[in-house]
Picture 1 (cartoon, rainbow, N blue to C red):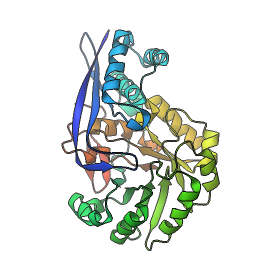
Picture 2: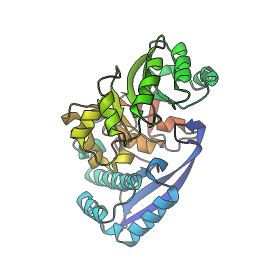
Picture 3: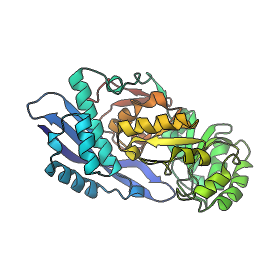
Length: 342
């Protein structure tokens, strides 16, 4: 029988993490581990609850306890766990933590790297990542950039809301003219017309170089996305519009690419399916994250060979990252080891 345990992690942030729908100074994630009661290797997984999907640490802890009571410990293989969770589906983030912990345990028992166990190439020795700037007053950007040495990242992601997007992007572009930017709206605009009007002002900013725009409208604005398709002047990527399931033929009518996050996908296997479906529908691929420790980021790096763009800086937002499973230098991430040894 396998023994599971869960530990809450209180994670103070280096600065206020503000996006269009909420702001936070501290995050509570969940650390799971699994081992055979007879001993042997330990499998570790992380859940990063997301309020956008109704997830809270307390609710995920309650779900975990219910799964243990229902017989989670009797699942000794990934197919057994998959069948068990299909009957008792937990929140996406908790499902990823459970599946990734078991995958890490199975890979360690097999003497394989996690990537190899998943049938993937090893992640590159150095994987480039974007760095994200939270929403802030334009006058605060220069000091923020200096304090956190943001200029070392060749690719910047700028979180925006509708009201301040033009002024914030004007200041970022003044500091980094010609730098490739990912503009992330997190559903900040209510409809396609309001976004199109503001976008004209944004596109007119001198020195602006946009690599892509991510989820400017709510996920339920399918008609709006179809109206915008091909008219923005840069790729538009889905984030909130693709969680654990999606109609990819329809997604291809709305978007040019997809940001897959393992915490949304609910597991390695479904995350890989989403990346492959994205590519099969001629869409660009992006690999993203929540605010996570290096355990979650290390896990994401195992599937990074299938992503065209990586946005995996969530662990750099933490004041005291506890595990040091991933290093960062000049905007490149280096996963340490072939197993997440905590």
